[in-house]
Amino acid sequence: MRLTEQQIEWIVQEVVRRLRLLSAGEPRLKREQPANSELSLSEQIVTLDTLKDRLIDVSRVIIQPRAVVTPAVKDELKQRQITLVRQGSP
Image (cartoon, rainbow, N blue to C red; front, side):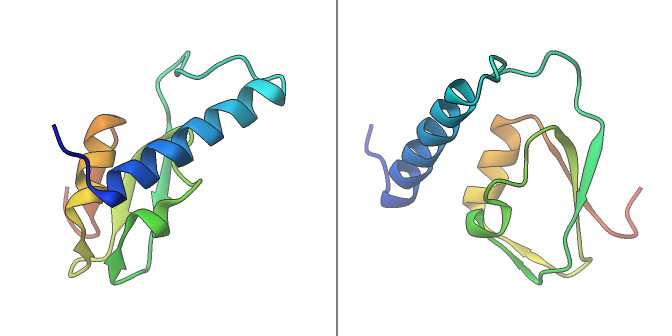
């Protein structure tokens, strides 16, 4: 298995994020309850950088009808079990 530079960067960021949670005294790394919040984005291009540090306890990401979403974002949302919804879609 070969990792892309983007995947390695995400792994490093995730490890740092989890270490910060542990050092801040927040023992939970997994959700204890299902997430209930939504994140609405106005960006026309949604990248991993757009979502950086914004997905904690998010269950849905709402994007503009014509927004372009990178494959890395789709993979990240799928891994976190977060639903991607375009505005105006049910």
